[in-house]
Image (tube, rainbow, N blue to C red; front, side, top):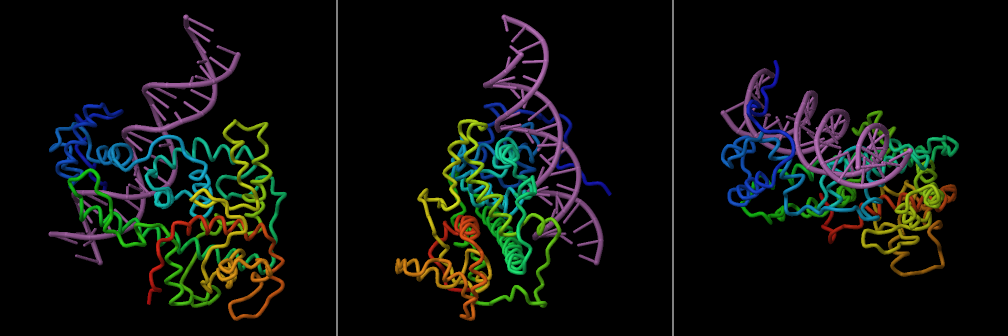
Length: 352
DNA sequence: AAACCTTTCAACCGCCCTCAG
DNA sequence: ACTGAGGGCGGTTGAAAGGTT
């Protein structure tokens, strides 16, 4: 059976919103909250579909929307999250406060996608289009890729949960105040973070366990390149492609700040050689993540560089073969993970 | 100055999910 | 378990603005 239309379409206005319509919608929501979107147009005196009103509000009129040019940090965030999450704009938007999924999607399609393609990077897979930069296919890489796939799926699930919580919270508090923020969200929802890590701290999941119920769709796993290829495509390629400024529009020259040995945090500070401060055992098999980093960084010792800690498996055995994973691997994935984690709120106790 | 082409982005469309009844 | 309403999401469209010839 066919779905009934969201509203009676006859006689309803379509197309660009006028300032008068905006004012009506704003005034109504300010006074009453949006409540039921379907019922809103009639109550607000608008000849619009409720869905259209919702879109106008969420994508344009909402007071907590930042408009204007995307910063370099935002661009980097979008690219890295897109590498991790694919075209999941709402999920990506949760990491870009004040940006709407629609705006991010548009920006990706009109700017970033083209730019990556121009630089020889497949914007879908984030791999080199030329195929000359092939990654290794050894067990380590495969294992790391599997770990990343798991991580990506958990992160996706978490983002969905966050979005749901946010929705529920908004619905509960559909407050008649324009400046209402979802402040009653749980910390994990209010502040994007890989809090799934905390869950995994409490209940260690063996990524290689045959009992794992995690599965991967082709698109998900295809979306995630192996660390090596990713390093080459996004990090190392960055260092090369960011220097193609002759062929790039002027703004692209700014992208040269993406040095292969540099991770730029959301605070704008360079984090050369920075490693995410987590000790989650499930991450120990991943390039760029290993136990002992936090302590190493905290005591500021230079006596042992990252690669030394790198090779340590979670059971304390040194696996020198892991050291073969070069610095760029670590830096690239630290870039992704560190960026996602950089907004970590004060850490809650591990979930039970 | 005008015609044509390209880019941008607000808005729409249709599918999907959730949830209440 | 089923159904339909409500809302969210991602893909696509098309008008407007900007650029080029």
